[in-house]
Amino acid sequence: MMLRPTNSLSLPEDTARIAHMAFPQGNLYLSLRDEFGELFDDGAFQDLFSRRGRPALPPWRLALITVVQFLEGVTDRQAADQVRARIDLKYLLGLPLDDPGFHFSVLSEFRSRLIAGSAEGQLLDGLLSKFRDRGLIKRRGRQRTDSTHVLARVRSLTRLESVGETLRAALNAIATIQPTWLAWCPPEWFSRYGERLESARLPKGQEEGHAYACQIGQDGCALLTQIDGTAHVQLGDLPAVQTLRRMWALQFTQVDGDVRWQDGMVTNARERFNSPYDPEAGYGARGGLKWSGYKVHFTESCEEDTPHVMTAVRTTEAALTDYQVIDDIHQSLAERQLLPEEHLLDGGYISGDLVVRAKEHHGVRVIGPARQNASWQARSGGYDVTAFQIDWAKEQAVCPQGHTSYYWKNLREKRGYDLIEVRFRERDCQKCPVKARCTRVKSAGRKLSLRGQAQHEAIQEGRALETSVQWGKVYTRRAGIEGTHSLGVRTMGLRRSRYRGQAKTHVQHVATAAAINLMRVAAWLEHVPRQGTRISRFAALKPQ
Image 1: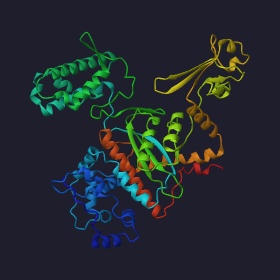
Image 2 (image 1 turned 135 degrees about the vertical axis):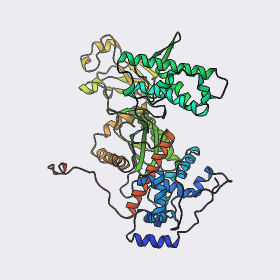
Image 3 (image 1 turned 90 degrees about the vertical axis):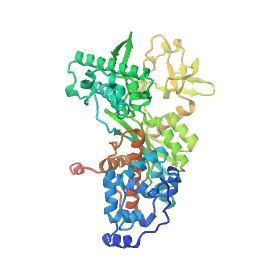
Image 4 (image 1 turned 45 degrees about the vertical axis):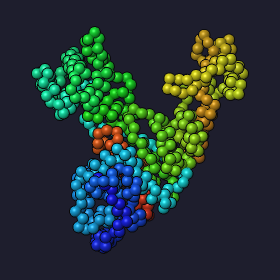
């Protein structure tokens, strides 16, 4: 398709007149059009279209319809019908009253173009540029970030169902492009993999289930052997076949040509997946909650004198921990000149390394609960690391009884963190009168594990600040992002992916964030007060 710029089109007179007659008090879409005009610019999407071909629908309108679609919580077909039927949407999009609309498949094609051109962020950035020009985003202000789980758009499978469906998906993919190649398949495969595998039709006993799994494993290996030995089409390049190889490497082993079902689940959660129909959806667990899908991180401004708008969105695999994401968020904000001066985070994001990196690289002060000292000394009132005097220049530590360490060595742990190991002499510790409060080792001296100086001091400073009243007043603003998640869940289905695959799910999350921004900015311009935390009627009766 060829891009044809249309931003210069004015609002049709009949559309404006009828819309204001229908909504004399105004509404969300009329207010946005009156305040900002066209909310997106075709130039941001010009690289997604060729210079030749059939003229495309204006990308700025498709982008705006995509955002409105999530604001309304409707499907592609319903969104296309609403554009044809609703006067307020015609007003927002600058369309004449007799505009025939478009086929709903255009929206799916537009999302695919966004993904192919890595331009999904324009759905949010286009609005942020408008808001920033109006002074609705404070430069170097205060922002907050939190994450929530997202369920994949596939049914949850048992381990046995998962391997069986993976093999069935590979057979169906091959049958779609080269059905004659499957003529060698054993007849029993058609009864075994012809229909969807469900627990109700699978063996119930443990031994029977194990035997059935081994049979599936042998069948899968036989299919892969045939694919590797064929000189026909490149069946091995099919995504379903690659997923089959990945699943078999995780779930089966071969010993002397015998295919064996591995005992237990795969220990590395980042390698596991539940369904062959969305192999990017992994397993996640947090606070007793377990799910298969993804995780989304929302960042929003939280100033009192400006609307709370979303500034960054990250969609990640479910098993990725929060502290592994925050550096990317800071880099994204820096590239778009949206970095805050203070960044409110929960404990899952906080580490000494992050506090130091954010301050040194971006000038951002990270505010959040530092990880508590989990040592038995700290929990029982003994001598934890804070009781020792650290001389970083001399690379020595002095214990509460005045003994000096004799050993100081820089190490690197398995997760890539730098550590410093400090040891005290056995003769000093074993004869110490307060040994019971310091160490339980019977044949050696006390040993400390320290982070680097900057990280160590950042952690200790953070723990000290948490006891102050002022810190508590500032940090209470972080809780407001829970309301953002609640809004997304209740009105836009935030915790359920509409699509399969992380890239498409990310488009959903970016569009959801942009839709929330439209709602909040419109409410701000109309001077609608923010709602407080909802409480039940009974809870409101609690004596103060």
